[in-house]
Length: 483
Image (cartoon, one colour):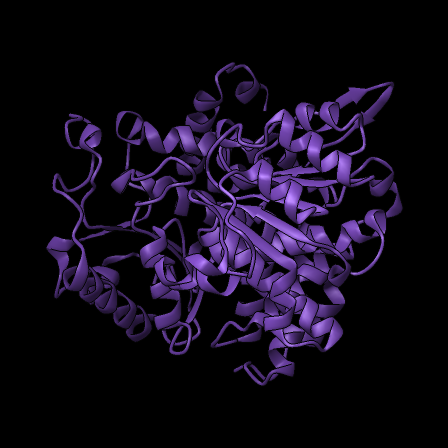
């Protein structure tokens, strides 16, 4: 750790950690587990974002498995070349929408590598059963295509039938080689592919999209926990999203499902408490015909509004959630409008990396005169306002996916259901104590993450048994007692 701390530049710390993982895997995980709050921002967001941008120029040796268009017809053979035979978790990306940075092509491999490191460090999954995969179908980034250090195919992205045929072959080969209980986590696919792939394979494979479902589960946990500070039930609150892509609509769907589950009202009715703003303004009924299919459930009756500020003033939300990928969009006017409407406005600036956050912790606390409940997608330092120290919490997917994945693996589940996501959210929310609330926190500290992941895994595994999705007859009692 002394050696790691000698580096001033986070990217250099990242490179040192990746070298260590290659040289001494056991020591790498020992460091990460014992110093999780310090090193998580290095091996994961926000530093991994810069690492992906510069992946070609810092590349030393391959991590994970690259499958390109050139391997079409041979993907099963490629999978069999991986030295480990027993794989339980695969994280796969095609690099088209890396965090808030866009198309990074093959250089997106930093994401599956980083996610699986957290499966081990935070969730307890053995590294030998984890497989990072990047599907290389080209990139539309001319900057990368012109970069002499770019490591992927130098061509524009394959689309349509060619793309989906390659993904179909990959998913079939995974099931054939590793069986139906292998978990495939889709990561950082572009919106137009992410929803389609999840819908296509969720009934035939054990699949999970972290951008849609993992983000939704961790945000729902924060919302459930925040009720102790806000008062009332979820159904008593109004939610306004800025951003209507994978993350925004995924969170909105899970909130509606939780409201429906707790109140027994139809999901369609619960949806009316949730409003979304996209690049064209408030999503309303008059726009329905021109909307993408995943936005249509949120097209409520209202006059068109073009700006976020107008939407805040008209809708009067108690919760403002940013999933836009566009930084500095929660302006002073917007935050002050939230503060004028609510005694304790809940502001979640979730876009990654830090530069893309809708607002900073300092801005949220200052513009609301210390009344905001704040969380973000990337970490922010504690901030003192009027003599009180606020600890901004990170609505970090790392709270959810390692425990969720481990729960799926140990139960032998063969499908992921929304009820499992709700079980994960509730397990996380239950870890927030009064001591945390007193500091304005709606998530527990990451120092407890392995214990938190154990509780989540036990809850998810129990739900898998309850739903009849488990293909493992024993072992749950043992794991639950350990958790």
